[in-house]
Amino acid sequence: MFGIRLKNLKKRLKRQRRPIWSLGVWAGAVLAATLAGAYLSYQYVSGWTAIAPGHGGDLPVWSDNSPSLYEDETTPRGQTMAVLAKREGEVEIVLHRVYLCGEESRKLGRHTTLETIELLKAHREWSASFDQSGRVVMEESVDDLSPACRKTATIGMDEDGNLSLYDGPPRKENAIRTFFQLDVGSLESSLSKERLKELTQGIRVTDRDEFNSVLSTFSDFARQKTADVMTPVNGTEH
Image (tube, rainbow, N blue to C red):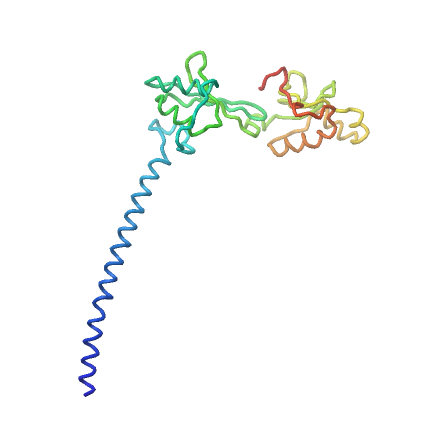
């Protein structure tokens, strides 16, 4: 009797395994299809988010691929993009970086007008214009000191009491920009002779943090407390 029951139990177990096995096959097929779809989606998205021109990597990789936004054609950037959109062929690109202290230019080579437009779309904070030779000059503002300026920049006070940024020792020919005029009387009564001497000889700044720290320290002694106290020397940036 027990043997008969055991055989019946085995038969029941065999019958129960079949739907479990079938469920496993079905689940595996669904998982495989899901993974395949995810892979294809990844490939598609990657193709749009990692676009770079085929010119030996001369251009920076696009930072985004957002849909084209309206460009104001009254601005140099908008006018440049409008001209590029009507042209075919290639143009030469120059990237000009303007730092807190210093500037530098880098030639990016010749690229199609479409690549040039896409680069501007990817960097909406850049300005752009054509120079006299027909090159597209893109300008980027960098909130830091240039590599060259890090080696030589000083902030000091000139003989008229102006706090200025210099490329080297604080001499008139080295002036890059003037920030504001200092209240010399307040300085002399508040600072030690050593600190005043350091200010007249130039305080070295090697990065943005030091640059901002020195400005913040001496802004308390500024005569003109307005938003436009930081003005370029002779009205131009260097």
